[in-house]
Length: 509
Image (tube, rainbow, N blue to C red; front, side, top):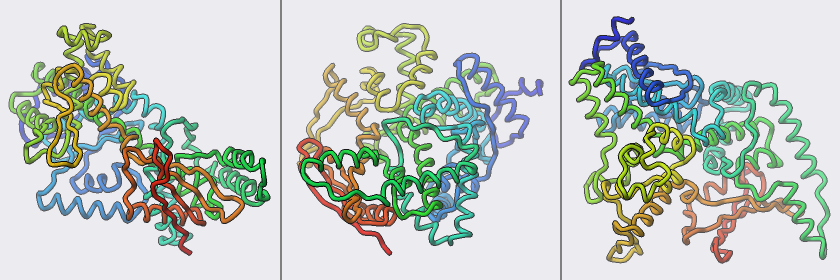
C-alpha cells in the first residue's frame, strides 16, 4: 500500500479499491492536518448509474419505504439521463454516522479523488459540526430508524392494504413542509428502541384522545367563555406550527398505525429541514474543502497535470455563474455564492484591505482563515451567514445589484455599489435564501370541541402573497381526511389582521 502513495493520479478511467484507499488517506492528511476538519467515520460505496438514479428517486436515503412518487421520479430522471438531457451527480452523501458517500463507478480516478475530498470531508464535516444539524438530526440513529420505517410500512401494507397506506402517505407527503418544528427544540427521540416504544405511544395517544374527546365540556356562557377558550388552547398546545405533529397526536379518528405513519414522515421532514436552510453554506464548505485539497495534492505530486486539468474543468463548471443577461441564467448558483464567500473570508483573514477592516473588524487580518471558516460553518445558516459575511469586494466581483420590480414596463435599480447599496444587496440576497420567508406561515389556531369539531387554521399573509387556489384546495382536503372532520382556514394580513380569504374542506368518506 505504501508504494502506491508515490504513484500520481493520472487522467483516465482506470482505478481500483486500493487506489481509492490511497486517495482517501492522502485527502485525510490535508483535511485533518491542515484544515482542522472533524468528521464522522466514512463509508464509501461505489454504485452504478442506475443505482444513483434510484438514490435520487428515494431522496438520497439508502433505506426508504415504498411510495409511488419515488418510482415517478426514477422514471423521469432515467428518461432525461438516457436521452442525454441531464447528467448525474458524481456523488451523494448521507448525513449519518458513519457518513455514507456514494460514488459512481463510471467516475475517473481523478474524479473519485475530488468527490472523496468534497463529500467524505467537506460535507461530512459540515453535517457533524453545523449547529442546525447537531440540534435537529440524529446522525447515529437515522439509518436504524429508516430501517424500522421501511419494515413498518411494509407490515401495514400487508395488514391494511396498499391503498389504505398509500392514502395516508399521500396526505403526509403533501404536508411535509408543514411537518417540521422551526422555532423550538423537541427532545430528540431515541430511535434505537422504536419498536419497544410503539405500545407506549399508542397508550398515550388513547389517553389523550379520552381527555380531549370523551369528556367534551358544556357550552360556556358569559364571562367564562374567554377563560374556557384559553384553557382549551392551552390543553391542545395551540397555536401549533407543526401540522403533522398535531394531527399525529390529536386527530380523533386516526388509528394507531396511521399515527405512526405520520410520525415517520414527520421525522423524515425534520431530518431534511436543516439541509434546506444551509445549501449555500453546505455546498460552499464542501467546494472550498475539495478545492484546497486537490490543489495541495497537485503541489505534492499526487495529481499530475492532466488529472488536475480534468478536476479544474469540473470545478469551474460547478461554480460557474452566468450573468443576468446570459441565456443560461436561471438564478444565483448556490455553489458559486458559497464558494465565493468561503474564499473571500479566507482572503479577509489573510490579506485584508482597509475596506475589509472597516466591514469585518473581528476577523480582518486575524491570520486564521481555516479557524474562522470552521467557526462560521458551525454557527450559521444561509440567511445569517450572508448577512454577516457577504463583503463589498465579493458584491463587486459577482456584480450583484438589487432591482425593484413593480410589474411595470421598467425596472428601478434600488441599490448600487456604495455603502448603503452594499447593505441593501446583502439584505436582499440573505432574504432570498431565508427559507422561513418563502414558506407560508400556517398554524393550527383552534378546534371547535363543542360543535362540529372543526379544525381552524390561519395563514398569516406577508407582502400580499396569497396561497395558490388549486394547491390549497388539495392540501386542505388531505388535512380534512386525516383530521376526520371539517377544516377551515383564514388567510389573514400579517399587519392589519384583516381576513383576506377563506378556505374550507370536509373529509372524504
